[in-house]
Image 1 (spheres, rainbow, N blue to C red):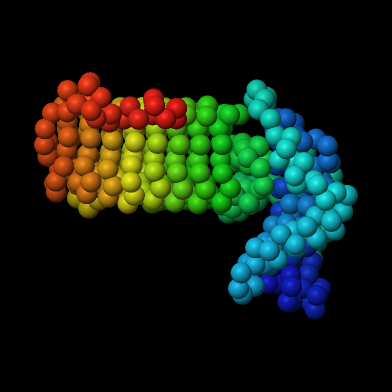
Image 2: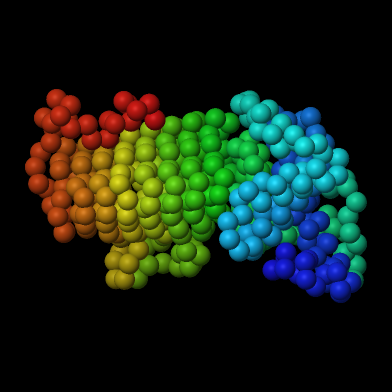
Length: 371
């Protein structure tokens, strides 16, 4: 909508043009503070002034949105246009983006001071929005809203380097991300709280949304195309049918691997123990349902979950459990070293000897792979 208006209407309508300029100024101000936070942390190069990099990022983001509207394949045109945008951005050189990537380095976390107003020229707010003429006050007001958090999360997914994205998540959304953790581009992450441990890795094309707390332990990775969702209807004032409260929490232990294409309903509580592998594709983990008092899914340590499994609310498995392909786990299994399978799942056999003799590795795959 913003790009369409800017291209088609703004040149012919001063009022709309002024409103568009205000919104673009707000986005540029947000990008400026993200760059500044990254430079203060040391994860983004300080060779270029933050206001110049903010203008460059805004130009590239708007250019990408415009090119996305064009029919047919456009990656080659996108590269040409991005180069033109870099060359035309005020105060930047053609190698500014690559210089940012090359200069990213891991440094100890240091507190980032409170942001100060954007120093560049700002459009007047009077007449455009009918509010206060102080743009900094308007931007701060937007920062406290859920709409801003979603907009910030969307913009951060398009930032070009891991260091810049990490700094933006920490400054704009308050996420706790270790300096050695990685968050790939093009993953939409808009949650109440995010904690990433040392060496954690979130790959691209993931969707994590809702008022939940998500913790990913050290050396754990979540591959692409996973969904972790929590509905806003599960707040403190929304008990389940039997009066139970939704915990709105998911914890992934250390050394875990979640393969692509799974769904996690984090309205309740999902706990995944250390060194687990959610393998294959298409598994679902549910923590709410009609007429159920249970809102948890607990997975022990060193477990292996095959493709297309289903976990119902209240399901739990003990340590060193293997769940075979297509199983539906509907209850709690407290005995470790078991192979589960079927609809509904039941204990098929003891696998302790197989695991100890290494004929079956279960969750210990992480030790060999170094994850």
